[in-house]
Image (tube, rainbow, N blue to C red; front, side):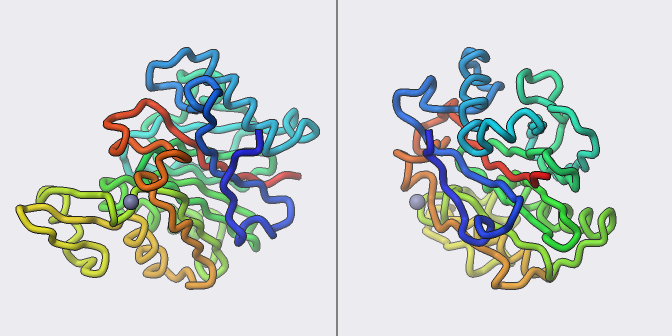
Length: 258
Ligand SMILES: [Zn+2]
């Protein structure tokens, strides 16, 4: 299987691996990678290994450890400094109540699962640190990308101007309609919210995350947007909204190899 989305900005970095998985018709659950949505776990774990083999190759896979968070729409950031797989082959060992993972360990592969929420991958090539973030509207409201950058600065001495960020496919301002209760949290982002009447608003969460990254010192050149809306591209990516509560999740992955 070689059914992945890659970012040019990260693909050129040596020893860095990254990918965003796509749906694969014919694979179990169309290649969903989530253990928490009720599918047969054996099939999902098999899908995960299939993805890992494709991205890393058989040579690297044995020395790599994979980390999955039990995502809760929180603003909790966890630094991973152990060399064991967590949450990969079972749900119980996943990082509890966490929506952003950071590591400077080589061969530790960080993952985020989404179907419309915004996945963001970070790489500091100077300090050699990677991060993977899940930002739905709650995580965006609580500025989890900023908190993750701050954690990289404090713990690893990262300079925001060195950090490369990519914003993976997520539901776009074209399709993400919200009510007043959600919109009221984002009123200050005038370019990312559009009043469409009847108390409804179109909200552009990828753009807001980009603005937050810029606000803490990332450069425009170092931020790459996929520009892909999961709802518009539902044949390629899972979309919780478009599929009216689908159980499928795709995975955004980043790690440094030794
Ligand atoms: Zn759309």
